[in-house]
Amino acid sequence: RCKLRERNIGGNDNDMKYPEFLPENGTIGFVAPSFGCSIEPYHTAFLNAQKKFTGLGHRLELGPNCYASEGIGISSTPEACGAELTEYYCSDKNDILISCGGGELMCEILPYIDWEAIKKAPPKWFAGYSDNTNFTFLQTIMADTASLYAPCAGAFGMKPWHRAVQDAFGVLTGTLEE
Image (cartoon, rainbow, N blue to C red):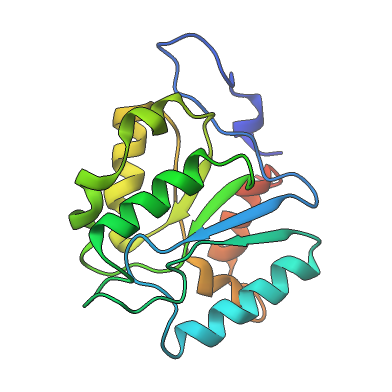
């Protein structure tokens, strides 16, 4: 079974915080703190991922920037992207977060993330790669919370899932077999 399950969740202040796993029939939140899913092939891949997740019994909560294309190289304004990420991370309406895409301008949203709110919120898995390192790295060092450098939302729309996608989902659900 997944070794993360054996970790101390919610220990003392000196311990890394490990989020709860995505429960059966849990809610997956999607955010676009960098590039969104407004153009092909990302749009169709994201739609396929949504079908896959709902087919597995999960509910979905899509952030307002998931299909936005209001910025150049970023889904929306840095302010809107930072606000979306903070709101959805702190929300009790989703169990985990998966980023819609990577990109190159997520660094511009960092001043607009409410890090104090992130630190105070219950730990939550955030998955994404490429530009999402701007959050996964800082989530770990600033909020002492484990994160997952893993495929973005659209990759979960592939058929069949690549082993990397299977493993990422296994970590998010706590079902990764060794």
